[in-house]
Length: 317
Image (cartoon, rainbow, N blue to C red):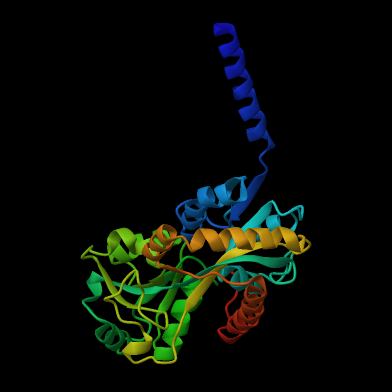
């Protein structure tokens, strides 16, 4: 009896191991370092997404060159539905900034799943003594190029978003490109940097830090993440909006049924009430979307961001 019990237990273990080994592995490639907004969100959804797809979902980071290293990696990956890029609007900005890429930012990919939109937060240092947007604008306007702003790199969302606002408000500030959003926050906290436009997630732990002043958000409506903070559009800049999309891109030759499977799984995951709550806490407004609609957003965004790089005469560092 005991022998039969042990043989049964061993058989079950071997069966479970075989099933585990049969699981396919889906890789989500993040173009920025660990701790970035894309990285945190990718890891947040990886487990429930794996359960939905009955697969292992792993997240790997391939930072560098404005995200183009990760994009090139995914563009050249086998189009078997197992490799995806955790992309955002920065994918097109970097694509427009670097002219000699081994891939095309639009044509080398197909939209697999849309996650939602994320707005940004305009921040300043306490050392500026400007507790609100009006006083910040007034002080910067009366001192052209005396103050600076930082970004997570030339051509990044944080750079072009802030540059767009400065153009809208007719302000002049010196640009200081840094290596990442974390460094931007630290420099603003120290008072060495006077302003920045950053993702909500990056300032999550500093919302009540007296060294940091939150001035406004950049979306068309108030953020669920910071509901008491006014938008730039309701603060006198009605035509200004700066939001980023986020989603998964697959190599262009990936079969339609593979990306449709991913789209269905992501739709189910992000519509879960718990996941919606967690996404909102990160400053992301989750929204499921048919692939065709997502493809339309990608095309429009590529044209728009390409024109911004030309309009603002942004050049590679």
